[in-house]
Amino acid sequence: MHKLIVSPYNGTFLVARPGIRAGMRLPRAKYGELAALADSGRPVPRWLVEGARKAWDLDLTATPFRNAVLVRPQTPLGYGRATWEINKGCNFNCEHCYLAERKFEGLPWDGKARLLRLLRDAGVLWLQFTGGEPLIDRDFVDAYVLAYGSGMLIEILTNGSRLHHPEIIAMFRNRPPHKVTVSLYGATPDSFDSLTRRKGAFRLVEKGLDAAREARIPLELALIITRHNAHEVHAMRAFADRYGARRTEYGTISPTYTGGPGPLAAQAPGFLDKTSVFQGCPAGHTFFHVDPLGQATMCKVGRENPVDLVTEGLDGLRRLPRIADAQMLRTGGCGGCLLSGTCRVCRPLAKAYQEAKAPLNTYCRHGKEDRR
Image 1 (cartoon, rainbow, N blue to C red):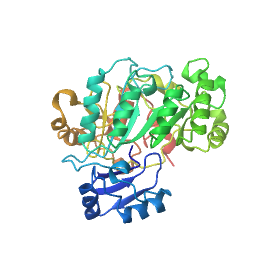
Image 2: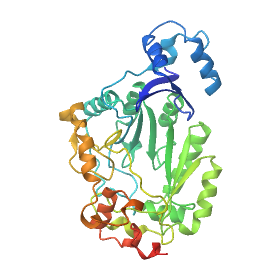
Image 3: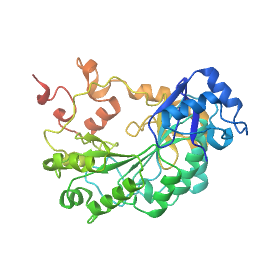
């Protein structure tokens, strides 16, 4: 099983170690040298042995190249990242969920396997498994093993309720994910179970985090701040620190991606994050999203004019940049806005807020909160 991945990425060349953030950047000539050694029984080149020791304290001395390094080929498409909604089904029923419906449906295993190979051939190096809840999908383990074996660096976006299962922990030990991001919905059972509308949810997640920490799986916690837990923000931060996990806080709750207003009721006044100016993103150009049926879109929110990867294959992805550019135009309620240069919200998300008839001060600088 490979210890290092060598891959093209957005016009550059990288060496990465699964489960560890640090990496190495390569010149084209060095990538070519390693590509020529792919599947070779010759030892790992001395310069890479020294680099691996310095970057990861990994000793590859006299190790056959094919036993330690997986080299990914260059592809005509430049998609380095993707998110895959393996299933929309979930064992929680969170009040703030952005999914319009949480149907448990998706491709059969043959379709999932073909889709993963298409992602590999599109050049995807970083792949995020999301949902719904990915760990409850019947094919999650097989899909993860196939993606890992294809040389992808994998992030799991999970509610953590199944993280303690021995099969999952053993797989992550043997095939380390780049990281596992667990959503934290409170610091106590009362707040956590209230938001997820699942009795016992907090204890399940705590059990999963304990198992992941013991197995030394790279963890990150996403602190979701809502009206149910805003009074516990400091305790939520302390909870994350207890696990030695990186943490990111999210206080802005969005509508469903179809413009449904339901999730907005979970917002906690005073925690809306409008501090970062939107300066564009690579959605549809170097990054894309795939839903459970193989429909590729620019991102999780901008789902207009999907490309059916199952029927169109990689050729369909060539249309995504134009589709993404069309969705980023400031039209409708944003047309002619004089503050567009300092807007905090991308156009697809702003459209969802507008369709949900959300108050301006929850997403737009025209709102009273931003008048100074």
